[in-house]
Amino acid sequence: AQSVTQPDIHITVSEGASLELRCNYSYGATPYLFWYVQSPGQGLQLLLKYFSGDTLVQGIKGFEAEFKRSQSSFNLRKPSVHWSDAAEYFCAVGARSGGYQKVTFGTGTKLQVIP
Amino acid sequence: DAGVIQSPRHEVTEMGQEVTLRCKPISGHNSLFWYRQTMMRGLELLIYFNNNVPIDDSGMPEDRFSAKMPNASFSTLKIQPSEPRDSAVYFCASSLKGSGPPYEQYFGPGTRLTVT
Image (cartoon, rainbow over all chains, first blue to last red; front, side):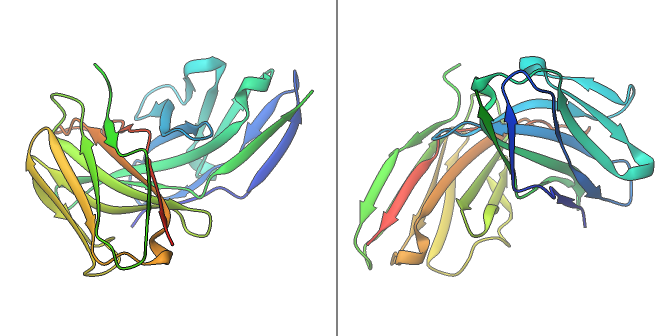
């Protein structure tokens, strides 16, 4: 079965600073990887996804993530954080299991942005 | 499209009462998911439907929880009787299942349930 680990529960960065959120996955085959963002009081929204091909994936809102098979990682990055990026970020791994899709979410990383 | 619609957005009820949460998935999507989110346990998958058929309900906590999908445009999650520990935000999500990789899930705004 697949699993996802987000080692950082809470991260604080200054506005304008760079950001990297860590995600490690466990899955025996080629993983399908996602990053979602949840703003306060809202549902999750997809930022980006990786299925195959180029290991550097671009997403919405200026985010990118890099798939590193050797490290079983899919870290999310942004070169310059804006105050509006304050939210909770979830990494997820998807797989086909028993003929259907199963997506497992990490526990989330809460991002605080300070002026 | 209006996205995934959930109702009510907030529900406050007393212990022992029946609670029904509703979800309308995105038109054309054939997979529907119910999640529960709490501070202690994070985001948990409760049940997953494909083409209106429950595929995996292993996440349903106990018999007090039941979910139905009578047609492609409507699903309910019912808790009877409700308990304070059921207090959480319940999300519905939908996606398009194909023969390829798992597709992105589109989440509704959630229902915040408080059981007193």
